[in-house]
Image (cartoon, rainbow, N blue to C red; front, side):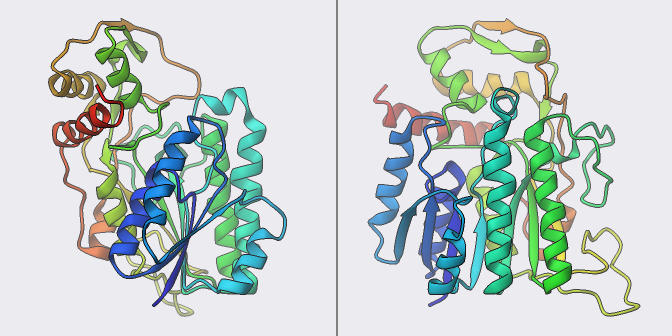
Length: 337
């Protein structure tokens, strides 16, 4: 039985990923700091469900803790590592940037150092569509230059891509960076838009709609994202041989076993349509409070998922209405509404 280390295992994406890995017969070690960035009870409930599986082990600590990961790699020698742990949220990075520095950059450094000493078969590290920053040409392709991040959150995630590339080059560590696009679904964080919208609509309160509703996102259902990650585990990047050209459209580094892969729904949906879907699922009409654009945000995102399809044969397919219906059903059950 192969072992997978998942950081951020009690998080929104981490919970679904661990569930999938356990179903597929892996032993899973989950590391999570259980921070109070949002209601810890939600994290505790996710972890409790995972602990019901005999092949899941939980460790509650911070990835940036010195020597923690080195010790863990030494004793457990994971076959795969999927690094989801990070301080999330574009807007919070303006209020508390240090937490992003410590968790995202220092935490990733500790992980890379441990992997250098005890190399796994493949490491997959979460990045974000926010790394594309001020890019205006869409859909976003992994081979696009992305040098103009507009939030500190995005800057830290772009930095981890560069850090990982250097380790992949120096130590021949196979690393895939996946950039995910506006993930949503059941068990979501309360600070995420669809969670906040559903809560306000069901409570009869107005919702804040930024940029006066003129925004688009490539909304990606959480289980579609997890399917993409699971399939990418087997798409291990290989350093090109000397003189060998990288295939056109592939983000594989010419000097390292490292690549970037978008995981998105390949459609850019108007924010107003997303809200329409929540109204339809809740059976209630939103009172929309139109607001100007917030600092650090972008007007639109849209993934080109061709590389994911070429590497795995998979393209996310869940429609916004289908995914939101599942989320609202979970929300009503969990909060007993």
